[in-house]
Image (tube, rainbow, N blue to C red; front, side):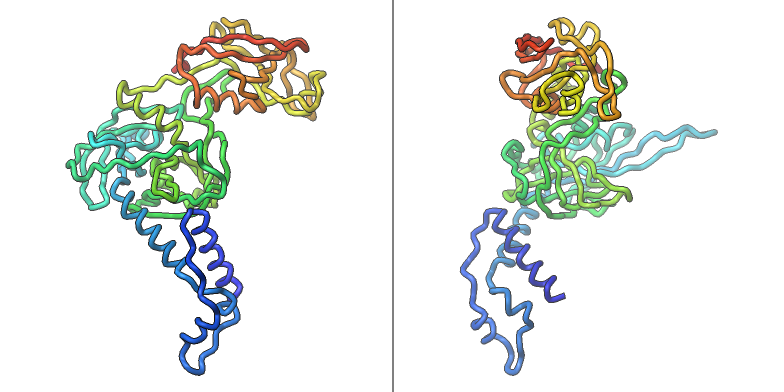
Length: 393
């Protein structure tokens, strides 16, 4: 127990330092002993920890962030049309989270929260409940916008941050409505970056789904009902929209995922303007060129890139002359494409995995933009220009 107290206090101080708050000078153990009642002795664990206002500073920082952001976070209740039963159809209820985007009443949430909704209501932090309607939704990024008919004093937009500046180890704060417990705040760190999640959108080539790139991983507890809520940095700015967890039980297991703000800031304005977002589309499927696959293809084992397995008929890649694999071979017991072009770079950005292509398209391109791919074909390096199209619905 004493060791746990020591470790907990050290972690608190470390989190405060990570968050960027200045740590005041530490008081000596002698001064601490002088404050104890006569005849009392310090436990070895407490005696080993210099006292300071670090814990108070951290509490104040968290309280300030909660006060600033919590009024912007809402609970979303939906009624969905369930499976029909005779003689009447069955209705289901669901819940999620969202946050205020602007003073016009637009609220950001996950697409999967409102995808099948027939009725939507929004509850603000002061208990005010208003109805809402869908403005736009994008299954491929799992983002949506609803509009709430709310009083102006309740529409307090969040501040957005650039998720490209987020680093592993930084403080992460989630505010949402887990299990319907409104405006709950949880904390942790950024556990990893650059994760990829399957989207809820249409099927890609060979029946595979599209992917959401650049996803943020955090150990801040995220549970059912948190979907659509805000993941914040230590300044109280939104770095992502909490969207999913990895768990055998359906409850938080310390692995949560958030759609990065870099994607949110591209998709949401389009949804507000037109109700939909057009994703730049290359029209290929493929795999990461691993050392095993490279050797199976007769290439150097240290070569990295993305090998194209198939091309969408009449898509941008086919029109540009890119080639897919003609056959499959076995590599360490797995099937590997043979004969397709290997993408080494896109717009001079080195490609080390197939996910790098997905991420670059989402992060830095738009429909009708022409990009230059550096490829390896039949052992020869060359460049090919491709004009991106809009991803099919």
